[in-house]
Image (cartoon, rainbow, N blue to C red; front, side, top):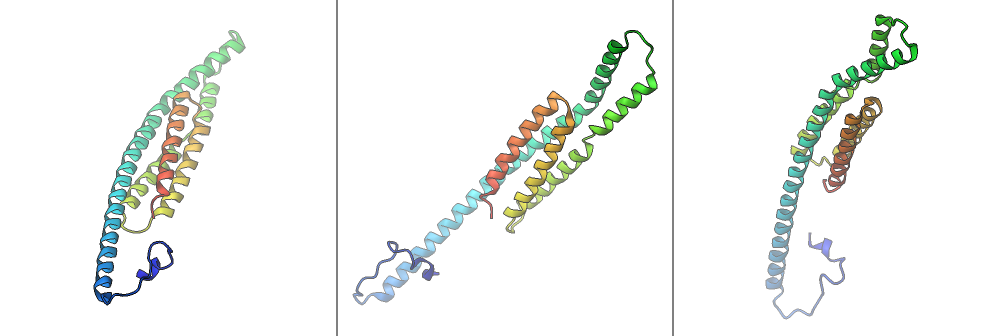
Length: 187
């Protein structure tokens, strides 16, 4: 309402009326109405631009999560190969128990399993996209969801034990931080 603007000293001045109070009031109402319409249009355009940026970043994050998923079998095989080589070096020709080696590889695979984190990450991304499309005020909820995604990425980074996955984690953290900064502009 007009009363919100009265508190701004230099925005509105009082002057002696020259008898055209009604005319001036209508003019002021039209000007304020136009200004509000322009503000609403600008906010709508900004919202659409932010939404496009969100969608673009989420697509990049999804691609990165897929690259991590596709990398997992190679990480396990590489660990098995490194472990075999290292054991052969240490035992210098002593026969290895293949069952024991398989058991160690299985334990490593269990400790470094990030499939749950990847699944949760995809679920969070789905929810993020749903919320962005909402007409409700979702800024705080988006911020909270991004915090959850950062936790998942941190866990992936700590369990991943692979340079390619580490590079993806750095990329994901950067993208999530960019999203978080932009979410601060969302109601």
